[in-house]
Length: 252
Image 1: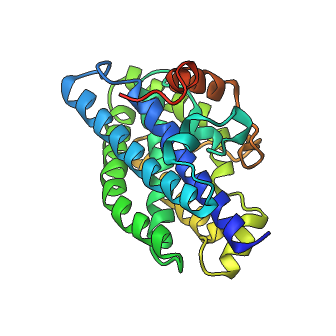
Image 2: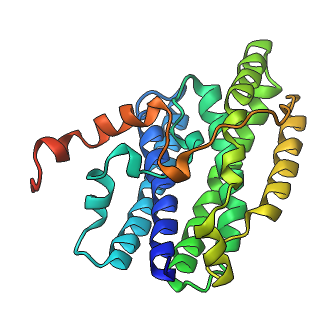
């Protein structure tokens, strides 16, 4: 595998995480528990879509086959998506939305802080821009975790249930393969081993302050690096890709 091929795959993975989570959060537009939160979640979704556009455009440039970021986003089959399984989990209730965002944004803050140091100037520049947005996403998720976890018995129980339900998908965030190994040697990719330890400490601190229990590390779901997903991704893509597939090459 060449450095070019590895960088393409690495960039696609990052872009898919941003694209799919952006779509998930966009589903909550006009459905927030309060107006202010409706706007907040929609803004986070827009941030994610903007990041996805930058990453997928860079991936298209690396591939060099004349594709656009739209082509990559809307004209791939499910097995060719590489977003983490945690990202595609549904908005079961507000607690699940917040728990998912907490796990993801704490990870992304640590990850993109390191990616800023990448020898790939484009990835480093995207990281530098997006880290400013991620700080807000992370604080927003932390604030709501504390509010729900240390709130009423109902909100506490719902938040604990959400944390428990989603925990099995968190281990995959720190998996690495030959793509990561090659790009780490080239000074491009991020080493996830030290990030994992810091993530666990940070999450444990937040959950403790929220009077929530941190689940034990038992069975962890995996597969996204090979294009294996839960049934949720297929439903997302059927909605997200419908217009492009029904009217290919349509212009406004």
